Amino acid sequence: MSEPLSIQGVHRAYRSGDDTLHVLRGADLVLHAGEIVALVAPSGTGKSTLLHLAGLLERPDKGAVLVDGRDSGQLPDADRTAIRRDRIGFVYQAHHLLAEFTAVENIVLPQMIAGRDRNTARDRAMTLLTAFGLPARAGHLPGKLSGGEKQRVAIARALANAPGVLLADEPTGNLDVGTSTVVFNELLRMVRQEGVAALIATHNPDLAARMDRRVTLQDGLVVEV
Amino acid sequence: MMVKDKTRDIAVLRTIGAGRGAVMRIFLMCGASVGVTGTLVGVVLGVLFCLNIETLQGWVEGATGAKVFNPEIYYLTHLPAKLNWTEVGQVMAMALGLSLLATLYPSWRAARTDPVEALRHE
Image 1 (cartoon, rainbow over the protein chains, first blue to last red):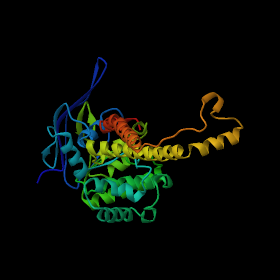
Image 2: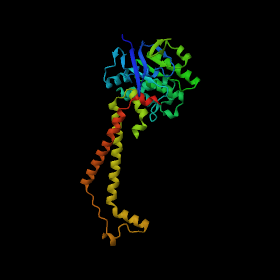
Image 3: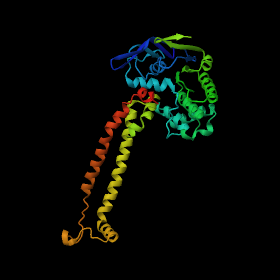
């Protein structure tokens, strides 16, 4: 069976005027099914770039990104979007919930984009909200939720389409220490419960220590810690 | 303006799997609904204005105490207003067409939003 995510010899550089910044220089990373990997690296080393490449939001200059064994590099944008919709979930440092939509609607939305009918999508959204202890907040707009609640809803949205891969960029970085620990516990519990392979960028060594494996970025390469 | 305000939301939609076509359709629908609403409101107000122009003239003259169209100057005993439904239809079609045209470029730009760039500075 193919791995949910395989990054093979990926290069990525950015041009700024006459300068070229080589962020990734042949990075390799395999995420096995159900595995939670911590990406621990200082700012500016390419964490976000690696996550964006893994999430098919950017294309590598060289190398390949395989999702479920399928090389995404040569696929047209529509196919990459479909893979992202069906197989990849994102959680950002900021919750990025749609302000005009309630908590449950934010979780229903990606499912409806994927073609699920409204009732099925709503049932799944309520199941996730219940798992995060937020069924009573289903009808609340993001503006009425606390920081921790917003981030829980964002995680639930990322899991809504039962992805094979969850990518998280400092998912609790905007929360206070206490809330961060609680939300992180729930994130890990839900990721394990759903059997998702997860790549989670974090600066927090304590949180990283609780994951199955830790990697970092050194000179544009992924290195086991 | 709406596209600029909603850049972050567009990026989020793209991230959770909405295609470029879907984003473009959302903004075309938004633009079209604003255009249709504006056109309908404009037509209703315009027709009412045309049908009641003398009453309205009376109100204005009563409120200001001045003649809107002094017959000694304009040689008009009343304001002529003729409602031509063909012209109303043509104006409606033109307004709807122009409003739809005006949404095309912003919708195309919305569809071209790069989610990475849009979320990088959030």
